[in-house]
Length: 231
Image (cartoon, rainbow, N blue to C red; front, side):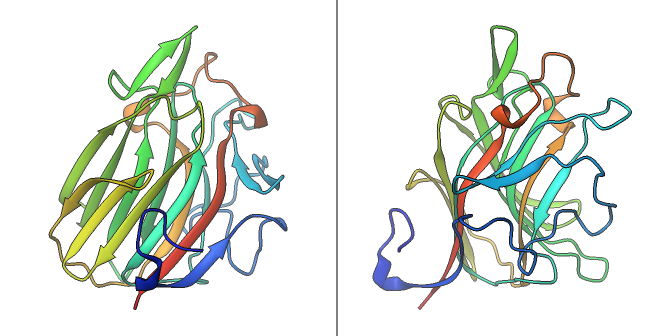
């Protein structure tokens, strides 16, 4: 196993979850640290993938779901990659990121976040349903201190699986889409971070409504999460 599009000889595997045996509670949490886990379950692991889907709670409101390794797995520098298909629908805000809450600091590396319900070119409405056609990579040295951002135009990200990746070096970050470099920035960040996969609602995607498909057939579907260290 090697990073997609990279020289395998340069890397050592440090983390892999192929989602073949359920969601491992020794590795993953199902909520972010400052929230109570939503009472309505909207995720599962089946057929070799993690699925998180839009769902309403008992009050009828769309709710956020976070799957992360906070307190269980951290890494500083390396190569991080997922293969995923994104959900469609107004309000959907899927993401793959690295993060930590250190005292009052909040270093954050957003490898992929998409807003299907955002104005074009973020999304495109097809038969009344918003489809994601762009994602962003964003670097935050701390909360409110953005170091850089790039918007990457794509095909419909809900139509099939794609690979989203980051090579994080001491003084540089390079982002990849299906193995092709799409963004790089010279930036220094040295805090260890944990992995995050989530399906939230809002921001540039707006609020979910009756046009937002709910249920497992419209999942943020992740085939794997992998990480490597540079030798």
